Amino acid sequence: QAQLVESGGGLVQAGGSLRLSCAASGRTLSNNGMGWFRRAPGKEREFVATISWSGSSTEYADSVKGRFTISRDNSKDTVYLQMNRLKPEDTAVYYCAARRGAGTAQIRYAYDYWGQGTQVTVSS
Image (cartoon, rainbow, N blue to C red; front, side, top):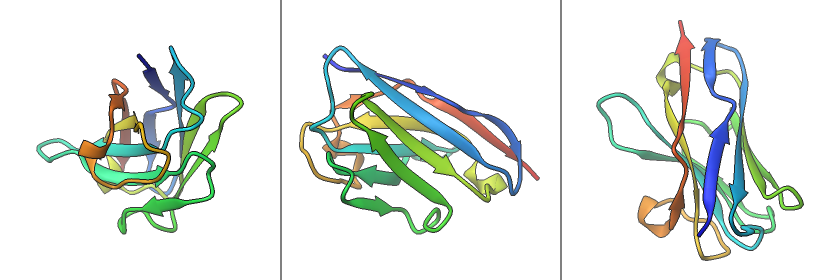
């Protein structure tokens, strides 16, 4: 059973940057597709970004395209989400997820393992 632990969240002013990390333990996830989702207050959990096992394929939600970058270091079993030019509407709990498949996926039901989430708050 894989465990995912997110870190790097916090409070930042609009226009600032944060880098989220997601570390896997219990089993390696270097052969698995990974993703980031977020849930803002009063809203459903939504897709943010996804990356294939090799890192060669990535996809982003339109709302973060050009501002966020997903990457991974398989030697460390860690996935990252670099968030630049943050906006107040990016405020949410961010979740890391892993899927048994090797490719990317934008739907939450394609993922088998989830972290507990890390809070990101962007002030205006």
